[in-house]
Length: 416
Image: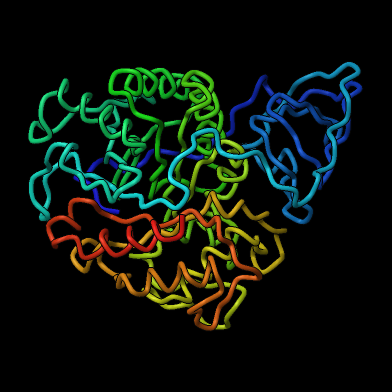
């Protein structure tokens, strides 16, 4: 996505430990592949104890043992007679999202800044075709803190708060996005994570946002401390906000499905975040633009940007799961269909590449939800609860005369 230009995400690689180093295991159950761990669980590995930072499943073959995954485990901890973790129950569905919203949703980003699409405008002027309005973006205030400064063209703060409430009264969600193309969040320590939680909670309470959107497009890398700290911080934030907390993610596809080709560095780096927050996740809408074709298990060649096959193939991977590093690093367990949407640009001016016509979007929805109008790639079954479509952006779509939102919203409404 595009933003108004901010500092690059700061995430140097360093592991946080409870003490000076691993401590000897004392009556702790051995760490095991295939087991599911909750935050705070302690397991023994190679004669040392480790405490889980966040809930996750140690998928067989992924090699997510404690010393290798400092984002998921920290050295130290004691058990006494703690029970062993139970094996993962397999593909049974996880609980439903805690923030109900449109069954088939059109999600759009609203600019809180001016860019070539023009000045921003009051939230009250956003078309009701958009079911989820993602406010772009929060700002990095340093040391883990975030801030939000309303563009004067959007009206006064009091008017904006009233506009948020009016949208919510119509059944819409209004959420605050973190990141953007050059967005910045600093989460290298637990203290910074606590600042992240406290500052975001204050913003949510002040403006009445339903939750947050994670749109971090740089700096997230395998093994970086931001991963474990972000997981912990989001869970803490949800606890403070309550059961209605809305959480979405909008990573670029190399950070997600890129793990199919290689699992390291940025490739698949969002997968531990997605996995640890899967029970808290309202929807993920991966960006299928600005990054070229998509490598999948369904074709020897990359699926082309702007095609039905790419949108279907990427969504199929998120729902049905896929191997990591061609199977050498285990696999990613799929999400529920209602947690998955796909992200595309609203027009030719709103992204560098990846333009799709409204007709391509509708055909992709037909394929995913009813096995109709598919290309070469087809899901294993129809997913009528597939959540919908995300687009960058509401502002560009309005500038262009609503060529995206009107037909796509009409298609989604017809499937309710």
